[in-house]
Amino acid sequence: MKKALLVLEDGTFFFGENLAAEGEVYGELVFNTAMVGYQEVLTDPSYTNQIVVMTYPEVGIYGVNEEDIESDRVRVKGFVVFRMVEESYNHRATKTLIEYLKENGTMAIQGVDTRSLTRKIRSQGTMKGAISTVDLDPKSLLEKVRQNEPVLGVDLVKEVSSKEIFLDDSSGPRVVVIDCGVKFNILRELKKRGFSVLRVPYTIEFEELKRLDVQGVLISNGPGDPSVLVKTIDLVRQILLHGLPVAGICLGHQLLALAIGGKTYKMKFGHRGVNHPVKDLERNKVLITTHNHGFAVQPSSLRISGMEDDVFHYEKFSNTDELMGESPAGFGKVKITYVSLNDGTIEGMKLLDYPAFSVQFHPEACPGPHDANFFFDDFAKLIEGR
Image (cartoon, rainbow, N blue to C red; front, top):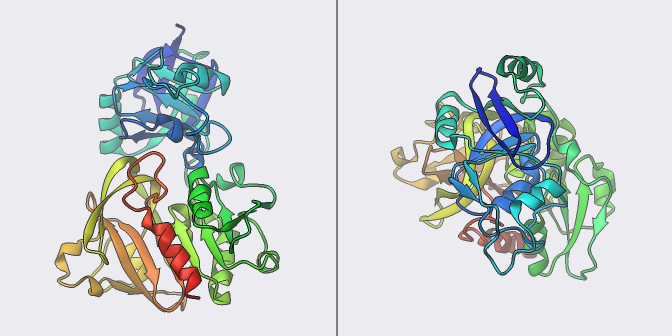
């Protein structure tokens, strides 16, 4: 196999073997802690413009099939593994992972010490990086990495959102999905519950959305910095004022927080994996959940009493009803419904004066456990009770 070079913006570099496409790609280097689900990771639009490092040392053993994709193509900029399994050992496989990466023109490198690389990202935070098969000079590639576009302040949703309105052929209650990079399984879960699903661009005008005669709105997951999506934030604000039931997932959760006057911040290295414990404060139980986010809602921006920083020390509160905030933009009370048990970040909230709630994790899973699948039932109940 041809030699490949991985360079980080701090000057760290790794030589390895090229697995698929040749060339040179740039992106934000992040890591995912899942042992399985690499096909869903590769096709998740939320990974747009990112080079994904898989922490599990051996990837690809069960191959690839057409049923487990989460968008119409591979979305990651690059893929980094310790070792790629060249054959597939699963009856569902239609091709190997290497074949799939080659077909999609994806840059991938193996033979990298992914444990060392992950420790570096955890200690220093995510950073820009590059994979190249054409420039094998670490100093030269480093200079190009440092000149590459920043991670903050860039609208990545425009690369993954639908360009027009899509309506399925169902006849149930009509809901709109604001497509910021929606995963296919979110659409599947809505259809399972009898909804007729309208997928619309993230730039849709509110007046056009009103004419669609819908019973509810779901704001999807997606990539990048939520604060730059000014038009979508204003759209969500108008939807709330109109009284439509609203639910948000991941980026949708952040956009809802921004719409009610909250703030978001970039996390040091984010949450990405299928094994993240989250405390459900309303049901008083722990859920194991799927995550893929590098931004989070700032607790202090929601005026939660006793919260001065970005971490939820929820154990200080004797009663979870105390975890109440207030919308700075006049949307009433905000209740925190989920927190991360790894680092205390906000993982969910609901508005008490408007029919709206959101989660930071991925209740649709794919990959991952289905502990939080009831999210879609809660959305259906919110619409039924309108």
